[in-house]
Length: 152
Image (cartoon, rainbow, N blue to C red; front, side, top):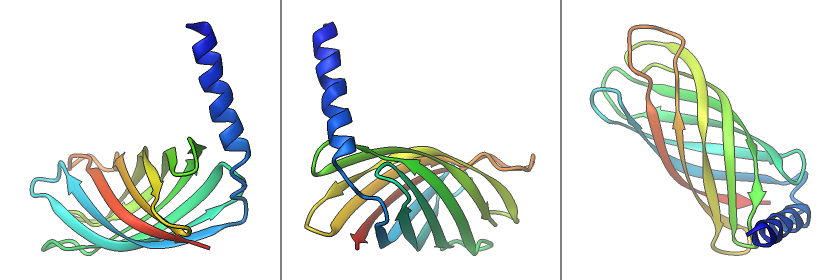
């Protein structure tokens, strides 16, 4: 069992070291579903990613909320990317958000996701994050997201 664990750990380390994503950008569209808000809220928007190192990247995003009484969600997340192989990346994410689901409030993003490389510069991505908000009158949204990104 110990040998299997060490082999898996070594494989993940080697693939993470060889990814060489530092300095790269990605842009893409995204659809979010905000649950735990009373009615589900759908959002359409865009994100950008910048990789500082092979593993650390930042992702600002803006999403138009398609529900009456709501308008927009601004978020920025820091992500630590684990390169599992040439096609799959997974990441935990933490960050900040501000939106007006009900009325304006700021909060945190805590979650993660994955990217799947479908072509040379194209990824499909999906994620899940919890948004504990800094107010006491509403429940904290859970956000499910799907999108695509072009890497350059």
